[in-house]
Every structure is written in C-alpha cells, then in structure tokens.
Length: 257
Image (tube, rainbow, N blue to C red; front, top):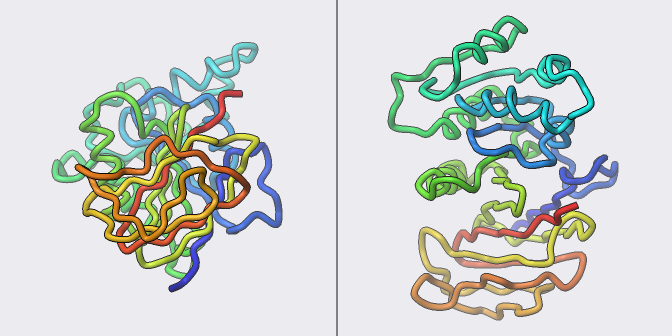
C-alpha cells in the first residue's frame, strides 16, 4: 500500500524548505467567520478563491485583523483571484469592488445541485494540470462552525473529491480525509496544533484501523457510529501513523496563540 504523508506546515509563518510533503496551496474562503490566521493562509496560497458570500468575509473581516492599517489598503492587498458560486449571498458593492480590481466573477446560479465549495474545488481541479494535482492542497477557511447542514455539505466535498488533498479549517481545528487506498504518516506541528485529535469513520464503518503515535492507539480495531469512534484522543509525539480498510476523517485541534 502506497504511503501518503501529511503536515500542517501551512499554519507556520514560513513553510520549511524540507517540509514533507512539498505542496502547492490554493485557498477557498467560505461564508463563515474567518480564522485569525487567514492572512497566513492567504500568504501561502498561489490561488485564492471566494465562494459567493466568502467575499463579504474577506471584505469585512480581513481589515479587522489589521486594526492599525487603512481598511481600503487591506482590501486591495487581499484581492481574490476568483469569486464563484450561485451569488445569493455576496453583496453587490462587494462584487463590484473586487470586479473593479480585476477579480474574475463566475455566476453559477443555474447549478443548485452542488454547494459553492464544490463549485470552487471543481474549478481548481479543472484548471490544474494533471502532473501538478498530486502536489496540490486546497485549504478551506470558514468550513466549520455555523449551520450543521453546511458543515455536512463541506465534509461531503472531501468524499466527492477523495483523490484531492482538501483541508477544512476553523479557528479551533482542521479536518481532512485519509483515503483507505493509502497508509498515512501525519507529521505533527506541535507549536501550532494538537494535542487533541480524532479519527472518525463517516460514510461507512471501518472493520480494521491501526495507529501509532496516539495516547489511545487502535490495533486492528473496528470503528463505527453506534460503536467505538476515536474522538478526544491525544497525539503523543511528532508523528502519527494510520492504516485502515475504510476512508477516515482525521481532525486535530489548532492552538490559540
């Protein structure tokens, strides 16, 4: 089984040159409160998209993270490359402002069968050459919190695009899918994340999951809703390994600093 490595180095002020894996980041901003580290994600990303009302959040909330600077300067500095969605949330003055700066606006109000996040991820997938997809990681800010049905829709996107690295972020934690097709080495950035973590079998039960590096490791353990679910676990060191016969969600807390 092929190895897949993971690291939250995108939460660091600068990504080490020897970071494993070496990734290219894209950022999608959703219509929920921006995490305090949103400027850092923006800095690391090569492509920045707002999903519909996420543009309102960038326009309104990013200047609040720089209270000693002119809000208009911040809004011009943090200009998204693309705004995409069904356009039922974005304010007209926000759309007009970014369009005047050269931001591309794509109205997909004709498509009511997919979420705005799904639309943005599909755009990134379609505009990324196949040779680069394996090194691409999509960071999703504002993916957690608010209405639970929105959160469930965002988690569903992880499964709809299970061949892509997508990380859902809030101020408190982040979530990503660990595909069953790989064994996983997760390198812990202990200065910015942990120790609380979880492995959650959403979609189908796991008949056998094994881990190392956790306070309560699993050893060919069955996990399922209605039975054992590994929540409120704790990372013990710098590396966690996971192997499972089912796709799992990995989640870990983000330190408040």
